[in-house]
Amino acid sequence: MSEESRTAVVIPAAGRGVRLGPGAPKALRALNGTPMLIHAVRAMAASRAVSLVVVVAPPEGAAEVKSLLADHALPERTDFMVVPGGETRQESVKLGLDALPEGIGVVLVHDAARPLVPVDTVDGVIEAVREGAPAVVPALPLADTVKQVEPGDPKQPGAPEPVVATPERARLRAVQTPQGFDRDTLVRAHATVTENVTDDASMVEQLGLQVVVVPGHEEAFKVTRPLDLVLAEAVLARRRANDGF
Ligand SMILES: Nc1ccn([C@@H]2O[C@H](COP(=O)(O)OP(=O)(O)OP(=O)(O)O)[C@@H](O)[C@H]2O)c(=O)n1
Ligand SMILES: C[C@](O)(CO)[C@H](O)COP(=O)(O)O
Image (cartoon, rainbow, N blue to C red; front, side, top):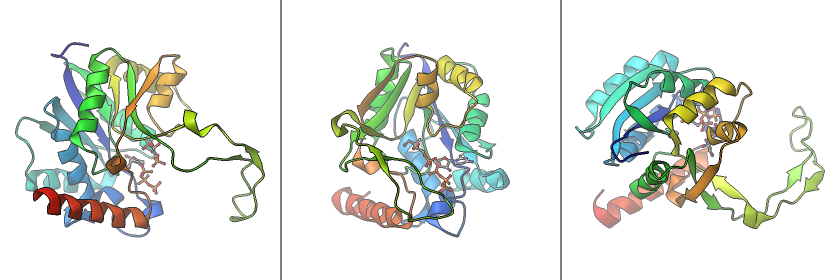
């Protein structure tokens, strides 16, 4: 993968945010007065290697997302597109991929729900793809011990679940985004894998190709539950205090 190969980012932003609770679609909710999606777009466009950002919007919200992008200051060197999303994250990513123009060789997929990822993490992923890895994921070691269980009846939440195994923690990683791919590899993965998966790199694993992990960052956490909003606001307040961000 050459330095000249253009890099695009697909940002799936079409989720409802059910775990966050009632309100607007998660990507459109505000952090420090600015929609989470705009933070995520700026985080991606902060990389000088990124020439195109494709936002996959809630199907009924594409017009609103277009006007949000027009209303917020974004780097001029980056192009932006908006396409409507699908029923699942996987479908939304596929719709974003389908919209990519010719000439893009590297594709990042980044959750709108990870608005605060630092640019060094983004650049580290791009660099690893450019150096030849077909799929790259940023990840962190785990702080908690993990148990594999026999899942209980979803109709009886809170009922005890039998433990099946305790995987060796030192070999586990908590995976973040942006995940980076050689474009042709990711297109082939989405065309081949039909079962529902929770991240794009696992589709490349199913093709039998090597996926590699590079260092993630604790500020690349995903806003999933209400407490994550508190943490995100605190991170932004610290950034403002530290560097007038
Ligand atoms: N049909 C979907 C579902 C999810 N996403 C996006 O995928 C990312 C990661 O998903 P997640 O954090 O699970 O978001 P939601 O699906 O919105 O959350 P929840 O499961 O709580 O509803 C988010 O940026 C979300 O907008 C998407 O583009 N299209
Ligand atoms: C892609 C991802 O962010 C990697 O950790 C995660 O798998 C998305 O999961 P979600 O349940 O759609 O939030």
